[in-house]
Structure formats: structure tokens, C-alpha cells
Length: 98
Image (cartoon, rainbow, N blue to C red; front, side):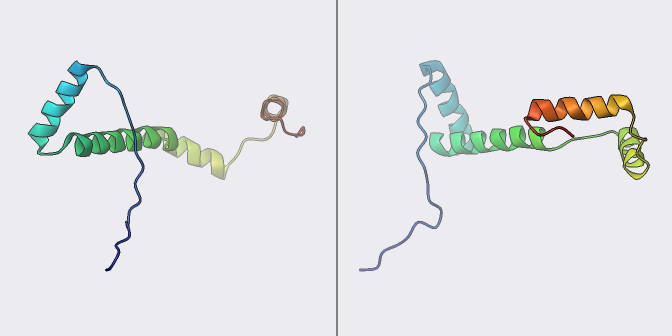
């Protein structure tokens, strides 16, 4: 007898929700033609992706992008305030002094 392997391993999530929230989710899932599980997994995945994108992606206006790249191409000279900021950053990060 042949055995099948799960190509996409799964993990279990458990959540307790108020009855009203459960009813709301059931109704929404039904309207989407999905099971409650499918609906919850898709909704959680979409939200997780959005949270991660907001955390990982920096969005700049055209003007700010231009200013940013100009600063990269022509960095300002290092002054005492920048040196103090670098030392403070190193202290906060627990690194040896710059």
C-alpha cells in the first residue's frame, strides 16, 4: 500500500473567541464560500503579510527619495554632533565605542 507524504506540513492554531465573534466569522466565511478554517487562515495570512510589510518596507515620497539618494551620493562631513550620535548609538546597542 502506497503512503502519501504531506507536501505542505501543517501546524495547529487554537483560538477562543466570544460567541458573537464566532457567529460573525461563520457568516463571513459562508458568504465567501469558505470553511471557517479556510477563512481564518486566509484572513490571518493577509494580516500577517500586511504587518510584516509595514515593518520591513520604508516608503518615501518622490522628494524624500531624491533627498535620501543625494545624501548617499554626497554625504555631509562628519561633525561633532554626528560623532556624539554615533557614540550614543553604540552605547545603546551595547557595542564598543566608535
